[in-house]
Image 1 (cartoon, rainbow, N blue to C red):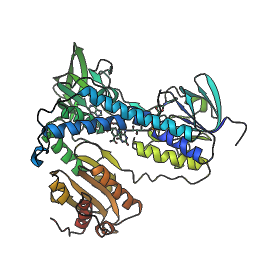
Image 2: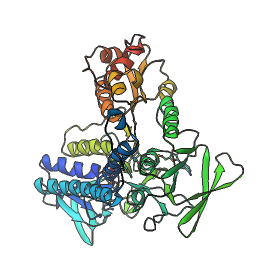
Image 3: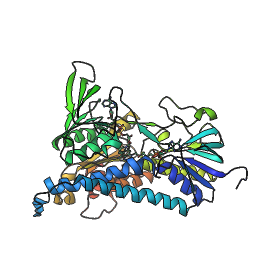
Image 4: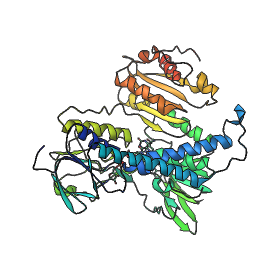
Length: 468
Ligand code: FAD
Ligand code: NAI
C-alpha cells in the first residue's frame, strides 16, 4: 500500500455499483473506504428501489391472488380476504432493514471503512466527507441517480398527493384514483401494486406505446395486458400542469402533438418520467471533470474517466439504469484498479419489469436489430401452448427469439410470462456464449417448465416447434 494515501480506493456512493466495487477491491487486498450520505447502505436499490418495490409487488400479488386470482379454480376458498396495508408496509421495511444491514455486515467482514456523509472532491486524490479530508490513490464515482422532476407537477412525498417512486412506496392508504405520469418501468410496477390493492389506475404516457426500449411486439402486448387488468391507458398524451385543492389533484392533459386540453382528477399522482445522474454538489469542477449533454459522466470501457485515477460506474454513467449493470461494473472497476482485466459486456444486459406477468428482454429488439443492418429470422412461441403455464392457468405472454438470418446467432430474446425474469437468465447466458438459435433448440429443457417455451421459440426460428 502507498503510504501517501489513506486508502487505495475511495468509492463515493454505496449503491449496488459502489458497495460491490468496495467489497471486490477489499477482496483483492486493497485498502478501501466507501462514502455514503444516506443513513443506511445499499443506495437507491435497497432503500427506495428494487427491494421495497419487489416487497410490495409480492405482497400485492398475494393479495390479488387470494382476492381475485385463480385459487378458487383450484378449490381454495379464501372468503372475506382483507388488506392490512400497515402490515404489508412493515414487512417491506423489514426486508429493507435486513438487506441494508447485510451490506453493513459485509463491509465489516471485508474491512471496508464506511465514511458517513456527503463526499465532495477537493482535488483528484482528496475527498472531503463531512468536513474531513481523505486522500485516496483511486476514487470511484458511484453516486447513482435520482428522479427527473416534471415542471409544473411538484412532488411532495410527505403529503402523499403528488409523489415520486419513494413516496409511492410509502403510501399509508390505498388511493381511490392514482394517475401515473410515465408508462415506463416504475409507472407500471408501482401502478400495478396500487391497482391490485384496490386503486383505479390511469397511466398517462407521452409516447404511443408503453415501455420504450423494449421490443415492439412486447410493447403492444403490454398495452393489451395492462388494459385487460383494468388499468386505463392514455397514450400519446402529456401532462402540462397540476393544481392541488384539499386532498385532490387536478391535472391538465393535452395530446402529445398539441390540441385541446382536458382535466383529470386524482387522489394521488405518481411522477415516473425517468431518472437523472447525481453529479450536483460533488465538486466535479475541482477536478475539471465535465458531464455530457445528458448529465452523465463518460468513461472508457475500463470505467476510467478523463481524470487520471478517477473512475465511474452505475447509473451516473451511460447505459441502462439497472442494479445488475451497476454491480457488474463495480466488480470490473475494482479488478481494473487492482491491475486485472475487468470487463462488462454491455450488449448482454437483461432487463425485467416485475409486474404480472413479467416482461423481460436481453439483447436487441427486432426493430433495433433491423436498424443495425441485420437480416433477422424470428421465432415466437405463445405461453398458451406451454404445458406448465397452461396448467398453472397463466395463459398470457410469449417468448420471441431474434436470430441473424445468415449466421443464426441469437441477437435478442424477449419474453412475457409469469417467470420471465428468471427465464431471461438462460437467454443471457446463451448469448454470452455466442449461441445460435439451433444451440438453444437442441438444448434439453426439463419438462414441464416455462423455460421450454424458450426452446420452442428457438425451434420456431427455423420453423419447427412441436406444440403449435
Ligand atoms: P444508487 O443505488 O443510486 O446509489 C448511489 C448512492 O450514492 C446513494 O445511496 C446516494 O445516497 C449516494 N451518494 C450520491 N452522491 C453522494 C455523495 N456526494 N456523497 C456520498 N454519497 C453519495 N434496478 C434493477 O435492476 N431492478 C429493479 O427491480 C429495480 N427497481 C427499481 C425500483 C425503483 C422504484 C427505482 C427508483 C429504481 C429501481 N431500479 C431497479 C434501479 C436501481 O435502483 C439502480 O439502477 C441502482 O440503484 C443504481 O445503482 P448505483 O450504485 O449506480 O446508484
Ligand atoms: P422510464 O424511462 O422507464 O419511463 C419513463 C416513461 O415516461 C417513458 O415511457 C417516457 O416516454 C415517459 N415520459 C417522459 N416524459 C413524460 C411526460 N412529460 N409525460 C408523460 N410521459 C412521459 O423511467 P422510470 O419508470 O421513471 O424509471 C427510471 C429508471 O429506473 C429506469 O431507467 C429503469 O431502468 C429503473 N428501474 C428499473 C426497474 C426494473 O429493472 N424492474 C424498476 C424501476 C426502475
